Image 1 (cartoon, rainbow, N blue to C red):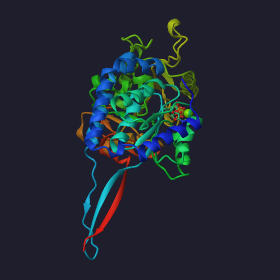
Image 2 (cartoon, rainbow, N blue to C red):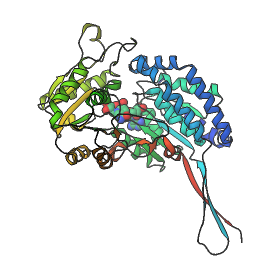
Image 3 (cartoon, rainbow, N blue to C red):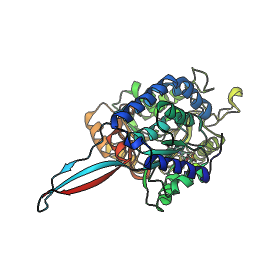
Image 4 (cartoon, rainbow, N blue to C red):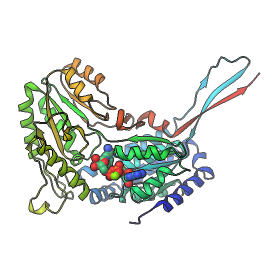
Length: 449
Ligand code: NAI
Ligand code: MG
């Protein structure tokens, strides 16, 4: 893998700028952009087995899970293909004297820098590229250095689908060189970033130089609230996989599990039993449910949190450490872990771990659950499990988070906006809001009198 640096970012941005100013992409009709995005969707659908294999090899997601992401990747492309034909301004009645007509035009913002993490390499690359393309923008994508393979291939498929050369540029390289250069680049009009909150803050600072637009999807410490009237047969696996899926490497994972006191002991026992029967192992084995963490660095980070939890008095009722079984001892495997005896102020209950670690916390009333659920700098995901309509509505309104899932977790759809409150970022991905992230609004006044 070539290691791109600031000079390669310069070349990528120059190519994207040329393609934006002189190339045909933004002059294509909406139908033409739609047709090409649909062709790209077909190519992705045809090649998806290989794409899934690349992601599994790169970041360790179980092959069953990376293959299952086909519907989402293809669906995103087809949704944004449709969005390409829906862009429009408004005609606006004004109150000026004389005959003067006012309307707005929607125009592509220009060159977009996209910076991605490693936890869903292909889907995340599609999620950044497709709406920008639908809007008529050109792009420089800087994938995560841990998982560069499938995003590079997406770049090739873009060419094969008929997207003109220079419109999509993929530059691999580390964050501190290539990523930082893209974030600061004076000729980039917008940066779309997904990753840690600390890097998001660096990107905001870097954006000041040319006042580029920024959208950020950052970390989380999402509350998942189980009431004593919940359907436990659904809530136990639902709340477990809200954290353990992708070995916990999901920004909106419901890692703070609030359980109403009357069912706390039973619930903890059942979720620990669920954790213990999960099949962790070689991600190429189709029967495996959880693979390793992405890297040595992530392994150290997660096991560091496990040690911190124990040192602060938490008790692991399942898991609690690295998996040292002979066939897995050389990989970055961590046991699905459920901690009890956790207090809200402990490090494991406050900071994003990005590993398969649940903190189970008892609560008494709905008001208390909402208040403690909101007592965090983050606001990305959240969950509620209850059969009581009043609880469901009150808690859904009370939680300060970009998504609330009731009696489910992590439902996603290309048409439904996703994003954060507070330090989980700003801007929305998916839905009508997403395309707006890549558009400028121009007001035009025409004196007709
Ligand atoms: P990161 O946020 O540093 O990296 C994400 C992307 O940003 C990568 O492409 C990286 O190369 C790039 N990057 C890094 N520094 C940059 C800079 N100064 N300017 C521009 N781009 C830069 O995340 P990292 O280091 O991979 O993981 C650290 C922790 O962050 C994880 O353990 C996890 O807790 C959290 N994280 C959260 C994610 C989320 O979706 N909420 C995704 C990835 C990581
Ligand atoms: Mg980093």
